Image 1 (cartoon, rainbow, N blue to C red):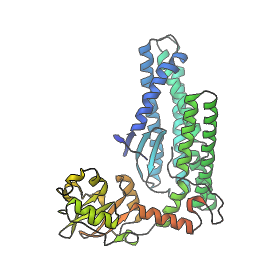
Image 2 (image 1 turned 45 degrees about the horizontal axis):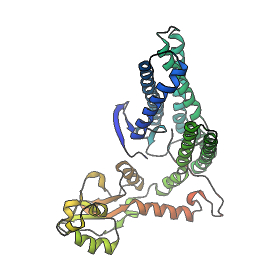
Image 3 (image 1 turned 180 degrees about the vertical axis):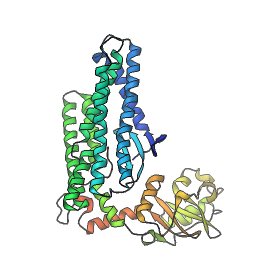
Image 4 (image 1 turned 90 degrees about the vertical axis):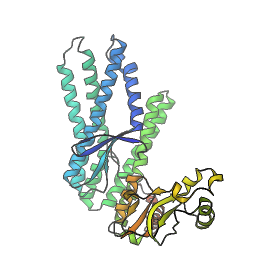
Length: 395
């Protein structure tokens, strides 16, 4: 989900990241507040004051979102649900769970913690604004506090909408899960609500665009697309957890993969391996031990006239722990490692020897096949009636 993110700090044991998309959003919010919102809400101030108000409100927004997600993460940790970190991105923030919830009560309380935190902040900011005084000197402070109070109230109430992946959707899923004892069914219903809510936002956004409200309409459209996109994977992800849970990598890896030597010239690599086996990457082995992996994309970046001069060792990625996994590790752990390292294949190594290769593409194809055979492929039953999908991301 996150392409360019930077770790900012660690808070209560959780790493806090910011995605480049949120930085662009923050700049846009600051500009909008300084030039459009605060001059109307708090008139007759200097331009520099409006800009300071915009900066302070944007920082307050950042802190509010972090607090919202931090409350999710603290409760998740209380119920043994591992959180990889907190990331701010263009549509707000997300506490990144690495597995499904452990119980309906745990998920319900974790989901409820975020809106509760935002509504509590809304009350605090509103109380501070009311006690800050009505003097002209206090007007900028009151304006920022009132804005943050309103913003947190909107954030809290919006997230209570019972539509996955919003917090209200997670609360709905937890309640349905507790009722029927069926996480898959509960996910399907909550994700369907998310799909419907996203469609409604898209339609309303298009309506506002036709009315001439360009910015509002565009945001509603984009948020609707995000909600639909996030909900579209939850059902499949839940099924994937069930399908792969408890299975070991040795069951799904490709054994005895085609390997190449580090001293192999690149032109021979292309002619004798790439064109013959049609793989996009090959493990590099020296004296029986894996030392790296060479990708066709890296070779393609090199001038073709130099292929006969360069060796595999010149362009391969040297082996590191993120590339390697044990054949006895669980498949879900491998998927999490691929997501964390943004790679699509892992070398399966046992006692220093390469015994196989695990490709994300193969897992996805197997998952699609299993879902199709079980009547759940892309959320459809065997009779072809559509079913909604979902994802485990929450705001």
